[in-house]
Structures are given as C-alpha cells and as structure tokens.
Image (cartoon, rainbow, N blue to C red; front, side):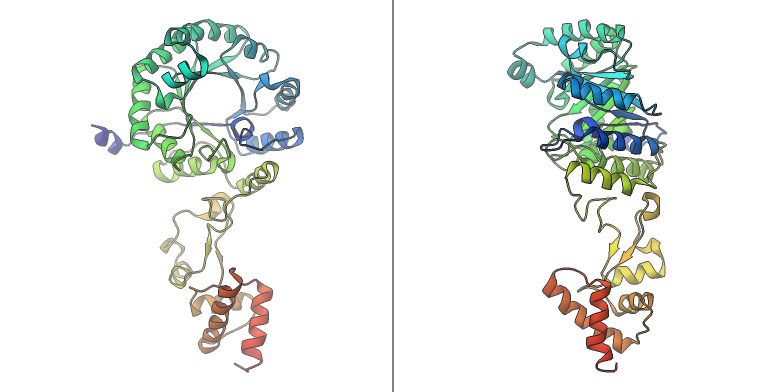
Length: 386
C-alpha cells in the first residue's frame, strides 16, 4: 500500500517556514546580534520565503526587543515566535506584533514522564487551556509536538485532535532527535493529513543525515509546511536545509515554493559569517566545491554538453561550473584552462603541464591557482621551449 502511495504523483503545495533565527540560533555557540538578525530576516524576505520563525520571547527583554524590531520592518513574510506551552511563556508573546505562535509541548512518553513529570491527560488539558489564551491574544496557533517521532501514535492522534478542537490551525510534527527515515515519515504524516483538517508542518533534524529526505517525504505525504534553516544550521547536526528542500521539491516533484534562490549564495554567506559555522566545501547546493570539476572524463563531458554531468543547473542557485586542475585532470582540461588564460598549448605541452600539476597537488593538497599555473608554465614549458 505504501509503495502504491509513493508511486502516485499528485500536485501539492508547500509553505516553507524558515527557523534560522530561532532553531538555527539554538546551534551550540551561535548568537546573532540585532543587526545580523535584521539582515538575515530581510535577506530571507527578499528570497520570498513566506514564513520566518524569529525568536523565543521568554528568553528575556532583549530577545523581545529584537523580535519587535524585526516585526517593525514591514516584511512580506509571516512572522512566528516559539514558546513552551506555559502561561508565563505565553505572557511574553503579547504585544509583539507577530502573526503566529508555536506552542511547544512534549508528546512522547519519555519526555512527558522524564522531562515534565506529568502524564498524558495533563498534556491534553494543557493544550485545551493554553491554545484559547493565545487566540485571545490575536495570535494564530501552531501546536508543536516535541519529540513526535517517539510518541505513541494513538496518543499523537489525540494530541492533534485536541489541538484542532482548541482552535489551533497547525500542528508541528517534530523529529526532535533526528531519528526517523522517509518511509515512516511518509506513513505517519500521511495518516495525520488524512485524519485532520489543520495544517501539518514537518520539523526535521539531521542527526542521521536524513532531514531533507524526511522533509520531502512529509511533503509527498500531505504536509503543508516544512521547517528549514539556511545551510542546515541548527541544534546538534542541524535542521533540514532551506536550499536543499526548495531545490529538492522543484527538481524531484515539480513543486515550486515561490522562493527565488538566485541570490542564495549571498544569504548563505551572511548566515555562515553571522553564525561562525563554516559551510563544508562539499555541502550540497552552497558548498564552494559542489560545482567544481577536476576529473578528466567529467570535464570533457561537461565541455561537450553540460547535461552529461549536470544534475542541477548551477545558475538556478546563483552559481556556475568551475574547472580546476588536479591529479585526475586530462589534457583537454589543461588546454581549456590555459586557453582561458590566453595561452595556447598543443597536446605535448598540455601533457607536460599535466604531469607538473599532478606533482604540485600531491605536495600541496590543493588545486593550483592561476599564479601557480603561470609559474608551472614558465618552469616546465617556456624554459624548455615546449
């Protein structure tokens, strides 16, 4: 049955709710100042990200001031804040001029008993009593099911039913520990989507490297919203990366989110610098090396037709292919790069240069820069009159 559902393609709409400014900042050691928060919020808004989760009011007056400063920018993005499902947390959300609050409450037996010291009835009663209070404050409500992935599913159905009955418009299914895989996500989100009328949001963590895959599975199963962060920033191994989810939805399912990633490299760099978390060289979509090619067979194929070795057109995300020389390069790549430098090489000369390049990268553990290639050319070609 699950296979049949997976094979059935039907149009679906997904709203991206980016939480870089909340869960992203919860990454250990990360702290954005107000100027950085405003720059990130403006940049995400410029990309047409429809929703931004921008902070935790209960953290204190400074956090609330920052939230108000972002709210006063007049962004097109809807703004959310996060709080525990507690009366004192909710009071901190008043007068912030945001659109929605995520009221988070543990729903797994582990966290209900061992973290809160409560029981299931207490959880259901707390939802019933706190959601109306938030609504009276003029806020739309998303009930966040912390540790949903470890919750007894029959109880989870009761939680979502209680949330809907109390007036919440959304339920956030949180894979808090990042322990799920796409097939179980598809099954559970599918059942929730079929059983209730409210919006379903997937919140995935990347502890097993599956956050994006789980988010895409949730989208296929009927989720309406997906939580993301720029560069996959977030607690522990991070969250589902905004860029991966947006590209994946479009590339794999033809689903557009309205988000324009043409200027995403600048946003990625902004978050990288503000967070102090360097993006890995081979990080999908945004890593410096993901559109960089060295292997001779790949370079030759790309020069003949980019589609030979192009899964994603880098122009869609504001990038371009880059060729570098290294141990696995071929003479065609050497000739192409030197031609771009204004130097014509015949095949024997290109082969001579290639041998020198292979020696260089073995010693330096990096591809040669233009200045390095100029020196190699002078040493191995001009001096020997090749």
